[in-house]
Every structure is written in C-alpha cells, then in structure tokens.
Image (cartoon, rainbow, N blue to C red; front, side, top):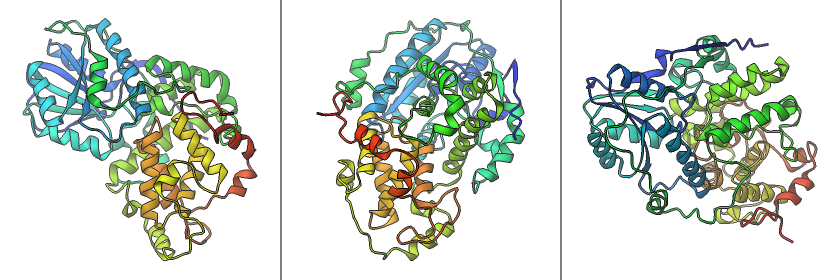
Length: 469
C-alpha cells in the first residue's frame, strides 16, 4: 500500500519545476506568461512563478493565449470548451489586475510582436511534451534575446524530475514518482491582486471576431454533459468525490454506469490541476484503498503518458512501439483480415460490429467515449486495417477529431498501448495482433450488458444527443 503523504501547509514552488530554456538575460521589462496547456488561474505554478518575478522586478504581469494559424488538430468540441474556459480566465485575471490577451496567427510573427508591445523582459510558459507545442516554443525561442522559462505545472512531479528516460511501464515509473511525491504533493499558494496594474487599459476581447478568424464553426455545437471552465472542473471534482469515488474501482469499467471521474476534459485543457485533484482526494473521508485506485490513474498513469511523449519522439508512429511488439506485428502483416474498413467507414460507424459502432457514435456526438470502450475501439481498428501503421493513423485521426480531450499525451499513449503494446507485455499469439493484447466482442459481453450500451449510443442524433425514433 502506498503512503500518499501530503502537507496542507502552503508552500512556494519547488524550483525544479522550472527550466531555463536559453541563456537570455533577465531584463527589467514586464513579465509575460504564455498560457498554453494549463488554462487556469488557481493552482497554476507557471502563473505563480510569473507573478513572483513580476513582483520582484516591480513590473506589470501580462498573460496571453495563442491560437496557431490553421490548427487542424483543434476540433469544434475542443474549441467551444476552450473558448468558454478562456472567457472565465479573462474575468478572473481582470479582478487580479493582470492583463489577458488572446492572439491568433503565425507564432514567429504575432508572439514577438506582442512581446514588443508589452515591453517584455522575461517570458514564462507552461509545459507540454507534444511535438507541435515544443516546435512552437523553439520558434519563439529563436526570436527573443531575453530569459525564457518553462514551468511544468501540469504534472504533480515534473516530467524531467520523475525520470530521465522513457519508462517501460507503470511498474518502473511508480517507485520513482512515489519517492518524489512528498516534495511535490503540497498545497500551493494562490495568486494575489497584482500590485502593479497593466500600463495600458485592458480592452475587452472580441470573442466572436476571434472565433471567425480561427475558422472552425462552433455555432451549432451541441452542449455536452461537460460544462467548460475552471469552476466547472472543480465542481465536477467535488461531485465525483462525493458521489462516485467509493464505487469507482468496481464500476469504472462498466460503460453503462457513469462512475468514471469525467475529469479528463478539464485535465486536458489544464482547467483543473492534477495536483488539486490529488489533494482533494486525500483530504476526503473516503477509505484509503479506494483513494489509491484513483490516485494511481491521476498521478502514475497520467504522468507515465507524459513521460512516453516527452522521451519518445515517435509517440504517434509505429517506430515508437517496443521492439517485441514491432517484431510480432511485422510477423503478422500478411495475415488475412476478415474485415477491412476505410477511415470514412469507421468515421460513419459502418462496421459489422454494433458494439464498436455504438462506441464511435458515442465519441462522435458526445465528444467523449467511455474509457473502457476506447481500448476495444482502438484494438478493433488494428484488427480491421491493412497494417498497424494505417490502424494507428486512423485511430489518432478519429480520436483527435472528436474527443474533447483529443490531441493529448493520454490519447496518444492509450492508442499506442492498444495497437502497439506500449507499457504492456507480450500476450498469447494470435492472427493480426501477434503478441499484442487482444479484446473481443464476447469478452465485453461477459463484463457488461452490451445491448444496453448499443441501444443507448447506436442512434444518437448530433443535433441534440437524443436517440432517434
């Protein structure tokens, strides 16, 4: 049994969360925080570090969020969720006398321009292990000559502190994280009203104009069960602890019972801190063994996904699979596939398998598929594709197009686990899959009432989420 020790005492940030990305000199200009992955005001160590620097330098603090031009990985569910969350941030930061801006356009042009406008002296950003985010950071890094810092405020234990290499599985990273948790599982300080207000009067953000520039139509995006924003994330956390945590372990893998935490959209956008989740679980009166089951997911498994994407540049590629899985999948490339489906057929849920179709419909029209079904869904795409490369490509494309929490380390890692055995072990050999773990229709049938799930999701209407008559 793990001892999840933590302290209620509010402490300053552990300096090992911060990386100096360049040799730039700390200037006396304003402090600027580039908010990206962690879109919240509370429990945000990157924002706290930015205010600390701004107070030390007796200067203003400016925060901005940037939309890359023509971002193909942002779906309409995500954009709607993201915009409503940013509107909340704008209001909260205004109360704290901190300016907030939203930029759109070429990274190498609009971000340096903004930094010039606010007379930036130091730049801080949060951490993401994903390729496109790291490329954006490098682009900006090449355009500035002052200090640029990165703060991992997404993980409880910073990814570069938890391990210096790609970990083989949860069992190899777990002891490393557990050893460091006492230093990081602490109550953070919160932002204060900033003593130096913005030099320029903050103009309201024209959200409709911004959305039009992004070019993704969200006007008819139906409301999902997830209300966006920082406060909504905290409310969902409280609801989960009060009503579902005690039965999480016994019912989380039953797609007909809504006993998952439903926190992944908030964690994906950083509207909710994993640290706040863990501290709230530990402060509850729930039995320790029931706390442990969920803490394993929100700490160990979540940080294992960041580890995989940070240390494996091929996290979305066949070459990123472990050697045993690649060898086994290669040996079964010529195996006969009983069914082959194109991306279009998969997207329209037109397969012979009503259970898979129902899962695809759930994701497509609700913006989130049940976690247990995500595994079955991805593994069947491998079974029904000409090659594991095509299966991987199709699973990632569909996941990122429809999931609210798409384009996330957890998503890439989950798909790599399902199709390429990442963080898993060799299983019994079978056609197509080789030694990669297999999941079957009958296996699901033995675990839950699949007809109830099929009936609920197979005919969902996009317009209102109801079942068609």
